[in-house]
Length: 226
Image (cartoon, rainbow, N blue to C red; front, side, top):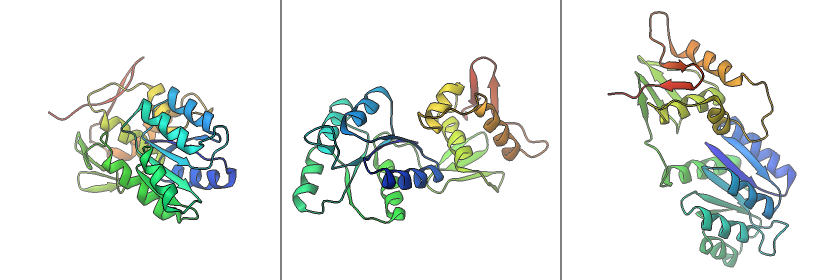
């Protein structure tokens, strides 16, 4: 899942970004209202975390939320703000926010709100993914094959989840990087190949078929059941 966070407080942004990344989300960061709008216009996100008090536009986060709703009426928007007045909450919801979290907040609550919004999103996928004998439960980041639970890192889980959500479709390395890594990723070019190798080692015991197929020059595929 890919998240856009629009937050001008660098300290808060860093803490939230690390928390989300450790939970398997890819996070892009914008620090001003115009930068947040630009990021949303050029990329696709599963959820937006939006500070209310942002520099760059008179309406701050309210203006960003209005523009997001002009572009996409479905993506969940969670407003984060230090303003705890009823008026601010109503204004935020009226311009299109789906939920409202007042600072300071506990990170465990933030993660719970994120999971809840993603479950309710019209774009939400089934809570359990099944393909080629593997069962994936995104809510708990659990993978099971032949009755055994497979221990995956958040990044391994993100790659496997995207492949399983798109079972039957060839997914390119570029698409996997766009989904599982943030837009500032500048690491080594064969990172996807490396994580595919990790997944194959963990998913298959000796004698079990490899569920991830490589289509040379095109990408990777997990066949759909049936």
